Length: 425
Image 1: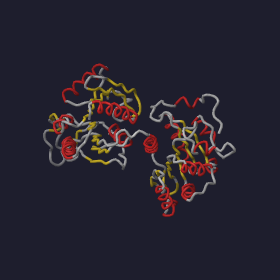
Image 2: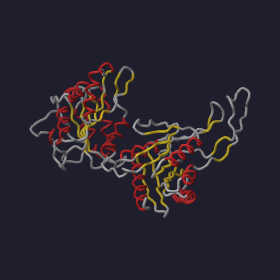
Image 3: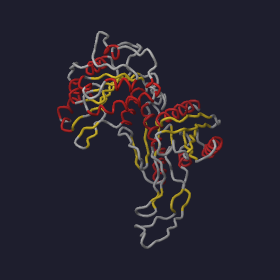
Image 4: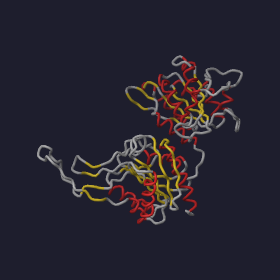
């Protein structure tokens, strides 16, 4: 497996979205499924987070795409056959700390044929041989099936169960339109990140997190809400779970899918959020509470029964009242728990943003607060990116520049954990 002797232009995208995969090498194995058209996109998203990606193609895969496409996508030579350079050993053999060795094998897409071969120890393609070698070297393996639904039958399910039994990760498929489709891009990236985060620095720590918007009813069908997608809180939950925490997520009506492995309590209104948080903090021994939900500051004083008729009511006035601050309620309920709050502002200066957040931290008697400007279109609410300032009681400020919300979540948790230990929690 010859290495590039120059800097390939495609590698200019590395770390443009964050550094969470910096220093990691991912071997992406491609097989003969039409879902292979997603491979360049997946590879380059991994690169944008800092990873080096090396691709291995089966013969069936080369019938669908030319290997030069993946060479272009990754900036690395593509392996289409095993030679005297013993590429499978270079990539996946037991070679501790060896240069070029893969940290993770991602078989994506994986056909029924390849899955069944792996499950039965058949190594007759570059992909199956690399996977077999990686299995013997205890390298993490993620398999992402993609095929026609009729091929996803009990025999294949038995083979998948065998792979799971031996510790391989199976992601998906999504059954839709008569197809067993490849998993969603975000889910693939998340699973890779989860497996490659080696530090388990939150083990033994119990964390409560809120995410998403509230909905305050006006009548039976109308409500007051905000634009929150819930993504920031969900990314925090995924990150802290990957780092070993015992986590519970209290979530409103999020626009982003919550992974099945995250224990979740679903709520709707501000009162629902507050009651759920107070109940958890009073009945269970949480170490940390992260309040990332976009709790409505106001709610209608009265809820009108039934549905307001637009034929009869030409003008509608809704009287609103201030809602309690959830971090204030949490602090009153539990004075021992370490609390991280969020403060959102629009179109303010950096100084104003930080000062207003710090005042809220002092007023609510919490340990840490995360400030961000939601007036910007490129970060915040519906965006996959964010930029924040993390402020502690001494007004020490950590600026996290615009990055993916998963990376921002990792930095928030880094600061929170360091501060948590300094306080002797």
